[in-house]
Each structure stands twice: as C-alpha cells, then as structure tokens.
Amino acid sequence: MKAVIWSGEQLDAQFSYEEIPDGLQELAQDYRTQMINKGVQLLLDAVVDYLPSQLDVPPMKGTDPENPELTVERAADDGEPFAGLAFKIMNDSFVGSLTFVRIYAGKLTAGSYVLNSNKGKKERIGRLLEMHANSREDVKTALAGDIVALAGLKDTITGETLCDPEKPIVLERMDFPDPVIKVAIEPKTKADIDKMATGLIKLAQEDPSFHFSRDEEINQTVIEGMGELHLEIIVDRLKREFKASIIIGLALILLDDQVEANVGAPQVNYRESISKVSEVKYVHKKQSGGSGQFADITVRFEPMEPGSGYEFKSEIKGGAVPKEYIPGVVKGLEECMSNGVLAGFPVVDVRAVNGSYHDVDSSVLAFQLAARGAFRDGMRKASPRMLEPIMKVEVVTPEEHLGDVIGDLNSRRGQVNSFGDKPGGLKVVDALVPLAEMFQYVSTLRGMTKGRALYVMQLAKFDVVPEHILNQLATKEEAVAA
Image 1 (cartoon, rainbow, N blue to C red):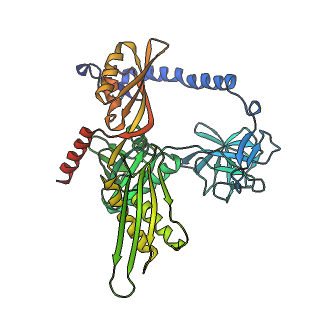
Image 2: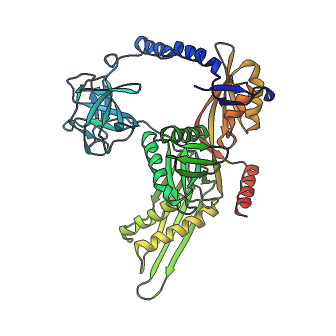
Image 3: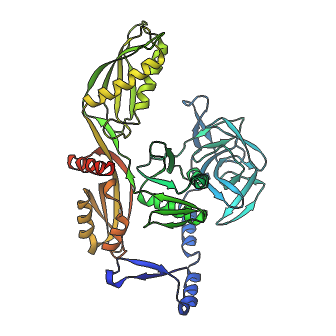
C-alpha cells in the first residue's frame, strides 16, 4: 500500500505516491482488511442470481471446419463431443503459459489430445488447472460449463476453438479491433534487444489488441494499441511483471533491471483514401541485355464506402492474357496499400480495377512493378485524402462539472451527441472525438472534476482530417525532418 498525497497548491489537481506514515500503518492495514473480498462477493452473488447457467441457454452453434456454410451445434452436456473456446492467455512465472478455456460441451481430461480447429493442429493437454485468483489446483477432468486453465499448449491463441478431433467444430471467435495508436521504443544497447523482445512477445500473446513490430526504416520497435491508456498499461505491466523500472517523464524504460529503452511520443495511426475515380495507363519497360521486362497495364481506382477496406477486380475480357500475370498485378497493388502517397499511411476504402494488359516480352515481376507505378500515379490523380480515427467517448461526471467537461470536449474538436442521467446526480456525455485530441485526457479530466469523473472510449470510425489540421501535421513533419 502507498499513501496518496494531494497537492493543495494545485487545487487537488496533482498528487503523488509516498510511503504510509508510521503512525497510520496499523489503521491503514485495518481498513484494508475490512475491504478484502467485499466487492467480489457481491459480484459473484449477482452472477449466480441473474446470469443464466449453460443449462438455461440454447446449444452453442458453430461451423464445420471443412464446410463453413454448415452449422454444427453442441449442447451443454457432458456426453456431447468436447468443444471449448480459448478466451485468455496468461504467463505464469511458475507454470509458464496458461490458456484459459471455457468448456461449452463434453469433458476434458489431462493428458488427452484435442484439435485446434482454427489451425487444424492437435494439442496435448499437459496440465488441467482450476484457478482461484493466484492459487491453482490440478484436476484430472473438467466438465461442460467449467472454466479451466490449460498448461502445455503450443499453437493456440485467444479466440480459437479446441474440440474433439473426431467431431470438429469452429466456434464463433472474438473480434479484436485494429490498433489506433503507436509508440516507438528503442533499446539502449544491442545487448538489450532480445531481453526487451521477450517481454513484448509474452504481452502480445496475452492481448490480441496489442501489436508490436520492427520498423527497419527507422530502426526502432513500434508498439501499437487501442489508446494512450492501453499503452500505459502495457508499460506498467512491463514494470510489474518483468521487473522494469520506468520513468515516463524522462521517456526511459528499464526491463529486467538491465534493459533500457527510449520511448517516443505517441503517434496516431492515420489512414489514406481517395475521393474520386481515376484511371491510369502505366508502362514498365526495362532492357539490359538478354530478355527484357515489359508490362503495359491500365488500372482504374474507385472510392468505396467507409469501412470497406480494399478490393481488386479484373475486367480483362477473353483469354488473350496468360492468367499467371494477374497475381503479379495483385501483389504489386497490395504491397502499395500499406504505404499511401500522402504520408505513407495504409490505404483503405479503395477498389482497383485492372482493365488491360500487354504482355510482349513480359514476366510476373514486370507486371508487379507496373502495378506499383500505376498505384502511385492513380492515387495522386484520385484526390487522395487523409483519414483519422474518431473515438466514441463516454464521460460520466458529477452534474456540477458538466459544463467544464462539454467545453473541454468541444475544444478537442469533439461532437457531443447526447446526454443522459445516472443515479447519484451523475451525468453521462456521449461524444465523437478525434483520437489525436485525446492524449493526456485522463489527467485533464481528473483535474477539472477533482478526480470524480471517468471515461471510456472505443474506435467509432475513420473520418477525413480537416484541412487546417492537415497543414499542422505537415508543419510538424517538416520540423522533425529539419
């Protein structure tokens, strides 16, 4: 436990953590003891009283791995073929990786083999554990309705189905949104790279909405998540679970008491798209002795509905063009979709329609290179535009602070959509706010409401970046380049 010291000079807007004074240690421990398990007991009572058991719900529906159109059902019965869903992965310092599974049908035995129907791979159940907080108990068998942790799985990740190898089924998996924010981190020395990577790999296994990658162009590791708070939690877990010493203000991370990493400022994952149709004819020609490379293609770029992603369509008529050249065009265009023409962000909501070929003295590589050139020219002619993530923000605040909260959201380019009431004189504000304006919102909200408000946010959509904001982004990029 720690003592929270509020700063009176800052009108309680700032606080710090310090050791509990000796004279208050006994009192603090007494109050802590009184609160142990109080909230958990109420929650579990509510689960028992209000939520349905497996016997109260219809059979779980899934699909046949060989025929996704065929529906397969599993009743919540111990006699049914086994079917379970992996919903969480946790790294335990004593046991290793634990996969939490809810058993929807059948029974599971330690030492048995099950099928990961998403990947078509068999897994052996090493240990079967019943979990209670940090304690665990080995069991031999688990039945329908149980939630257990499995040790020893090698290929199963969150959202995948485990089932009877003789009666395969694929249960509906959880959808995880794409990350909307990223931060670059850089190990202080080459010797630290492997140590830092170990921590990131384990966290990515547990959290499918957390990604990390190596950007070879800037020679840095990039971590991505669902928001500033999400990445702060990732950093905090590196600190607690991997014995990291982290100084956020100085942008310094220490992993395993030895690994040091510099942390950059958060960056928004923008997108690029187009606003009108364009059609380009591109000729790739190269002759350097021997057989040359020649490809002549026509590609039409069309804007699509928001959220549509990317689509390729071929309008080649007849069989005059060998089919083996089409994959070259597809690959060339898909490679460019991750690197737009405005600022190098991924391109979305675009349809590329391939209209013609000329394949004299050609190859798949030639058409791939021609497709890249057509992409660059076609995107520039189609009035490209930048898209930014817009977050759905819900703020719960005491009524006396409602005006301050709304004014602050408006100053962040927010669009307040509705108000609501909650018991206790609380107000609920629903708004759409660009993610770029939500950095440090936790601290701001805490300060303006004396710590009495809270908020949640999730990705709502991508929308066009206003012209004046686009100019500000360009100015920042030029300053960084200088």
